[in-house]
Image 1 (cartoon, rainbow, N blue to C red):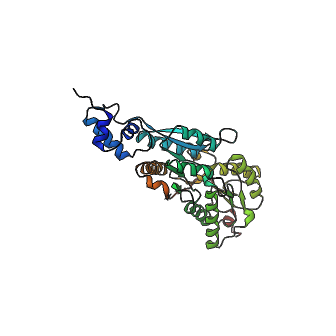
Image 2 (cartoon, rainbow, N blue to C red):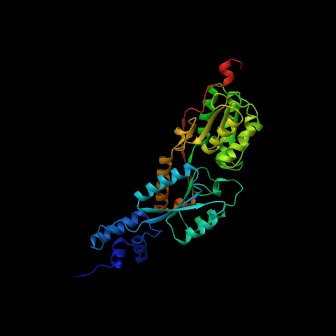
Image 3 (cartoon, helix red, strand yellow):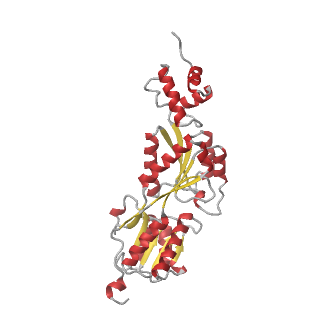
Length: 343
């Protein structure tokens, strides 16, 4: 009885033995089409059983900040599900201010020879930041997918919410309720998603004939505490509505407004951004802009797969925009001056 070898498989498919070995062991550098052809050849030669047909799972690094923000946890869950369905093993890499940095995590990731990297956040979403680590990934020919807005010059797939559309939805909702003194609570002034939201809010205000003075916009870091501190300053300016760049900022703002003796939404309406899973259970339940987490996660994994099949895609930039949804709950209401007829 003749025993088939890897050389026989390589000859049948028309590839090298090294390529056959990489395909069997789930290593990067083999397209899905070639890998399937190799597995089919092995089945025909009687070399592979059901337990090996899917091969060793390929590792994909998920790089994320501290998962205390529920939107990141939601993305991790959804992306991990779609990776597993494609026989890819998610390796979660979280960086924090006091722990491992994004750069040190990437160094460790590269030693594991992953199939690709999906970023949930990082320096890529901030202008004037050091983006050299991403160039290193490109040099290694690693498929890279960014969630939400990234620096324009970076190659790779960028799967993002259309923040301009989401902001206009929120502003239109507030304007329809009679609010003319609207405040903005945004992230870092160099953060691309915050910049997009700011520009969209200014454009809508100009079109609608609303005033949006500079002092009614607060730039801060993302988080409950920073949202509370920034909202204390905005609440003293007589705003009747506040649009926030994240749910965490919005909940911190609600706490601040209540400490000032203001009721939400009777005195000030508040809108968040992301739609974290527990928002319907807050008091008041938060009106927010919902990101399409499931659809974006599915698209991110699909983009990663396309890059493994066609390495030419590693050198181009492709943006995939997903329209958000405004979810109206209890934290927004009719402007108090509109109700009383004083305006």
